[in-house]
Length: 152
Image 1 (spheres, one colour):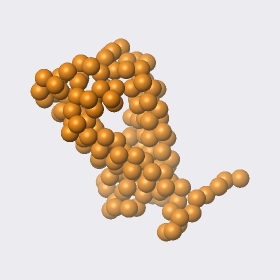
Image 2 (cartoon, rainbow, N blue to C red):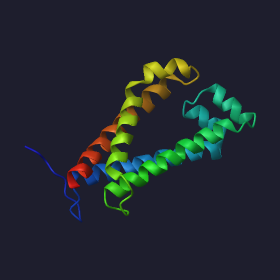
Image 3 (cartoon, rainbow, N blue to C red):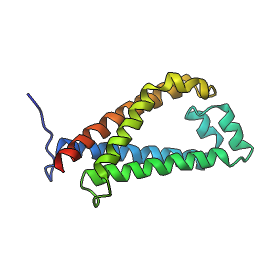
Image 4 (cartoon, rainbow, N blue to C red):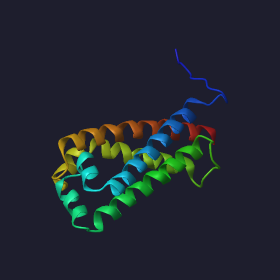
């Protein structure tokens, strides 16, 4: 028995997954921008590591640039999710991009044991929470990508 959600406008399950993941990606982008605005305490709270927080305190540009790049990437991902859901105009290669985003998120979710030695300053909490988030995002993007591919 397959259950289907029904909302006003009669969105498909794929569109609902894309609306959810688009919203989550937008919120993650905002959280990254908040780190920049709040400063070192936010980097520490989010588990980015003491080295990153100290670099922010020292006025180094690298943490801000890296954080801006992540926020921008998440914003583009959000826009593609909303495009696949039909909330904004169709962007080029929407199905392919959504599938690629899904692969990136799922790879990041399972690759943290390999990444952790490269970034030893990041806390265990950071790795577990961010990997769980990436797993959820990756699955939602995958559901959405399959739905978009079926439509085309």
